[in-house]
Length: 388
Image 1 (cartoon, helix red, strand yellow):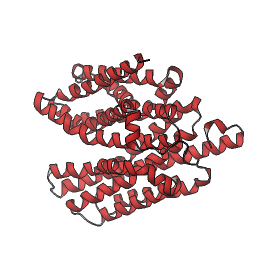
Image 2 (tube, rainbow, N blue to C red):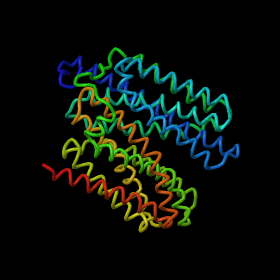
Image 3 (cartoon, helix red, strand yellow):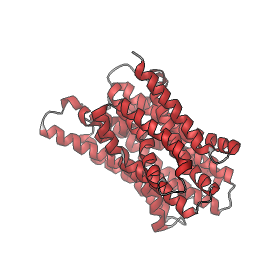
Image 4 (cartoon, helix red, strand yellow):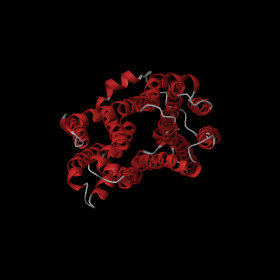
């Protein structure tokens, strides 16, 4: 089933039900993913684990994304999207059960790698389903809604720890139940899910890199922004003498902008074009980097951080929209897998690189590094727009 074939009201109802099921699946999965990062870090910190080892442990999940990405097109061809998504949900739950059964930081390293390895195909398959079934005139709004809800799911993960704490089995049971629920949701809507798009020649992640390097650099930039702000903004704020409570509130404001502005950006992309809207987002990011040192101690920092969160993640939302506009068939599957690869690279490389810059030139290295990323992406987008 494709967007072009959705002509009858019944087909439209089936498509909307499928879209709702896909978004619900990934949202629940995002809650589980968002819970595991802080939960495991809290436990390791309480055990007196070295900060360097905590960092290495946290990097295993995005590394699992990177390692699994090249296999996803082949696995989706052999197993089918529904079977692959259900299997990954079950395997991710088992990985979290194994993590909960031990408190050894060294054993957690390969287990967290497996957690990322099993989680990634579900995102890739779900986004491929969603892009392939979404009507082109509504793609911006629907992908914006998808990004907003998934971002909210990631935010709900850490919030759930305030209800059950970080000790014992209760927080792990929430994550395990969320992973299992994903598989059940996919199974419940499986008859309404579209077939995976198999038309065209077999495509690989490497082949997509050659087709759309700029699109993948945009995904890398969006991932780096999110990881750097979440991991190093506390260091930046502390260097400026800001209280921990204010810093935490600013990070929450960043996440709120991340979640709340995606539908608006998707709507703008439908009217003005996704490439032009992405360029505007990148330029706004650049200006936020320049204005952050000037506004940090004023009330203006609050709207700035909110907008910054929205437009920085908007780069990823607009990348998904462009992926659906430019590619179909097996190249679409390969593109989603390549997006996961680029996101993992951005998550692993971004924070250490920004940390080195901050160590070399001081705390203003954070907005300087992010500003440089924005500037490079803006230049590349302008060059591409001017190319015949």
